Amino acid sequence: MADYFEQTVVQQTIPTADMTPLERLLLSRIFDCEPDGGGWYFSAEQSPSSMILVTRAELENALASSPDIDSAAHLHVTEQLAASDAEATEIDLDLSGTSWEFFFQDIVKRSATLAYVSVVAAFTCSKMRPDGFGGMAVLITRDAIVGKSTNDLLEDFLAEAELSGGVEPEAETTNTAAVPPASE
Image (cartoon, rainbow, N blue to C red):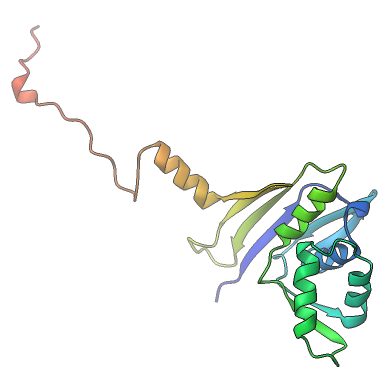
């Protein structure tokens, strides 16, 4: 069985002051993180997590301390918290219905210092599979989240070269029988 990895690096340090306590909590569980000056450096050695475990107390404290109730993080967590067992002291948050990109976009929208966040990822595999390697780059601004994978880039290159589906375009041919031989 092959193991697939999505090693990911958020290229900018995210200022602590720009994140709500809830975003900081979620992003620190989705990614590996370490302090970097007045902010946090986020990365994922294997892949960003889409399922995280948090205690109800830390989740409720982070929600109560996060003023941006319209943020993607706040909306997603309150919905999942309401659907969870009221007696559960630990909550499994399924983040597959949202994306960490939206959390970073909310941060950029509020930030006085970040105009964008850029993220790069390397796709690798424990076996040499044709679908197991590549990468992607994502640019997150206040207004948009755009990205391209290496497969997207290859498709762009093929279109520019007017190659599709691995088939050579028909070459122009000349009728050599109608052309008189060159005189010497």
